[in-house]
Amino acid sequence: MENFDPRALTPEEKAECARLASIFRQRKAEAGARAERLTQTSLGVACGWSSPQSAVNHYLTGRRALNLSALLLMAKHLQFDPIAVSPRLAALLGDGTHPTLPASDAAAECDRTFLLSTIAGGGLTSADLQVLAKVARRFIAERDPAGQQQ
Image (cartoon, rainbow, N blue to C red):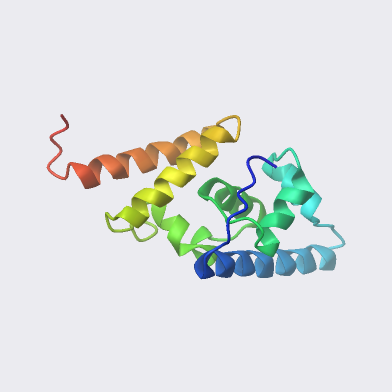
């Protein structure tokens, strides 16, 4: 797993992991009812992670805080709305379907953490680039509301 962050999770981050774990258990039960199999490993492989089972386990058990990239990948493969797990991260999309975070130090730190974790992860997918473009557009709009870039 790329760049494991050993810091203690905030209560909000722990709650996000718990909501994700609940959705995973629900989707696993649904898959079993259809005689299909969903495992942490299969989800991690679908997400393209180098240590698939470990990565998923760390998110589900709250050993690692969710980042936007991981949230979007798991939302895609488990078929849930990202806001159901993390309104905080979903707000970073600022795409009109989720509330936009106010311009604040906390929002800037979330964006900075996401950017650094994505870059440090060793590669950007086209989905990552789309998210980065949305984050950049939001930054520009917040810092220059009149549209007068310098």
